[in-house]
Image 1 (cartoon, rainbow, N blue to C red):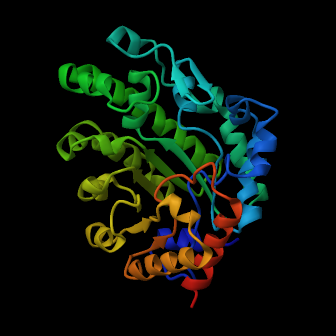
Image 2 (cartoon, rainbow, N blue to C red):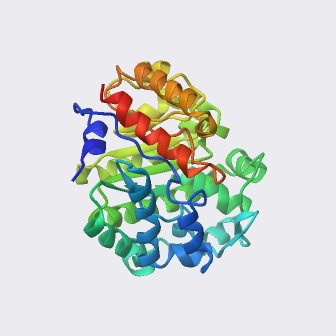
Length: 339
């Protein structure tokens, strides 16, 4: 197996810088679109054979150094009892939002092997196929909570922050229940064979540091503390989280994911003896080949003093990115970092 990604996560010497891309299995690939044309997004997430197929597509096509399980962070919320729908152009919708303790009481902490066993089956099937490490994942509690409170995506997060500041007991009760469910879910993924685990905190960046420290970070710390027993790399990605780096370092993660809004040299100084993952702007993949290679070279050089560096985008690859451009980036990372 190519274990370069795992070595970099642990801060060990590698022959080159490993690369994978958030949302690497997805809409930018014609091969994915072909699979997706026959099923809804939720149906796809629940069919292990199809999840295996789309997880493998970018590995085979681009030559990436790690695979990430094809799923969605909100699958767990549905298993907890929150009716979930996906609408093209609108994203995820929760028709029944959390407004009071009675709403929260309807949610359960499910046994993941029983309620979402298809995820673990996908992991087991992938481990038989892959020659690179497999990353499992979940949504961080704060990010998942925003969807349950808002009913979907939001620009201002009015309902979320209103609950935080006017009914903190209810908010913390919701966070605690999501945290308990997430621990069980990631535990099941590890037992099924995931070789690294990532928490996606997509909306953490809407919080002031003092509120992140109070309302979000303790629950991330609890999750990572519970997963230490598996001795596999743990990754925390707080999107738009440059102002939260000092706190994210205390999360318990081995690897800190970085978006593109911070200079990687500055981030490395703050992160210290932890590996970093990132952090090129996803839209930089649209640059002409020579300019893209030059930008990648500068980033690799800037990250040379990191305890470990996994090259990644600062967020998910955009659906209209030409696959050939992604391949240029992968090849450039491998070539330039091995010199």
